[in-house]
Length: 367
Image 1 (cartoon, one colour):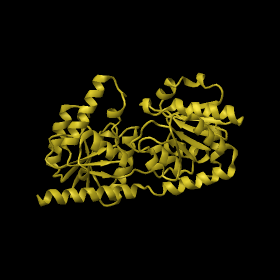
Image 2 (cartoon, helix red, strand yellow):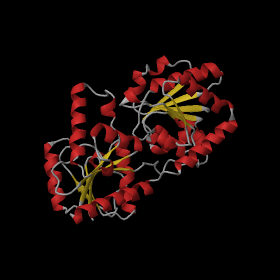
Image 3 (cartoon, one colour):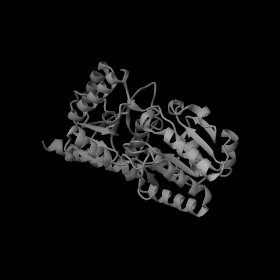
Image 4 (tube, one colour):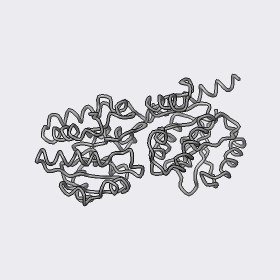
């Protein structure tokens, strides 16, 4: 069984993380892969791997890419083609497996209306063309059934996981290194900024932390990572002068993991997530998580994190204060986070994905 995988969508995003983590795990599990890559942005970690790597010169959204991938699928004698993004090739000579991470464009106005319409149309065409759809959560599976009328039998839920960098064991002098490099001082609370900021509710997180600072009298540092768009829309550093806000921008996985390991909490009150990968990454590092009860976040959090209405800044502030004042509660939440994170692994994600490959291949071979 030869599986083609469209890795051209690798970038600094949730989809990019999915591609970068799943592909090596599939290869380790013995899957025979033909990986189509953007030669100007190759997926790290595949050099020397037992997989056929094919550069695709056509740009991702072009008509030429459609013809090139169709030709390659025939030439490479693929049994299946897996696209990790909704912009999948349409005229393939083999069954298409599609991964849908969320249906946010159908639920929130995150783009100007012409682009929103185009994105929704792209989702619709791809889902109708797909022989099977993999989703990250039960939440997204339910959304697909309700919004796009996709039969349950055509959907498989496969959870994501934290990468190898995200683990609870710290290295020697790690805290001193963070202080030296980023001027970080404990205690600190971590929040994330994002390009698609409209559903991330960064402002709600910062409002809760502002309230926690005023109510508790405890000094703490707020660490914001990720692209500046979300922080800028939330008023920038100047708006949040009541506490010590440190904006770090993009971080390497090893840097973010080290910060999670020494933080008192990660606050993620998104209005919706199709999975919420940063939540699992923080939990894997033993960082207590305060998150939203919307979308897939409660499903992923389980007993490893505290969930609140994303607009209830008083409840979130109270949870932060308890972690700052109560060392026993902090340790209990750290242990719960690590325990829950152990339920997720890329090895399991890869094996479950290969199981879908085999089922679909058997189904179409029988026909």
